[in-house]
Image: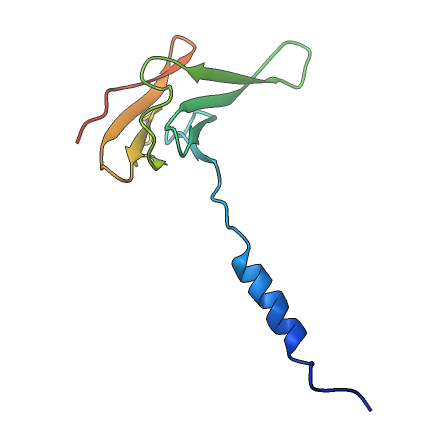
Length: 123
């Protein structure tokens, strides 16, 4: 005969441990440029607002390369906050919006001369 006194304790203890485990938000967000003939993906550090981008490039006699653009003017770390990326619905737009979810400020970020640059934040 089994002891049923503790049969509900283990599942409850497991559920309590899982619920108490810290939940970490993703550090980065990725968004494809809305331009329909561009294979560029933007990368955002959600805490600092830093923006970079990468895209596929062709190289002779190879399968290709990943071309990445480092943060340039305005695309580096911003004031600590909670940032996100938003694409316009404009099919010829190569840039994306960096939005500060706490203040509502927005910047436009795009690749210029092998760097990602962003306009000054505005509301």
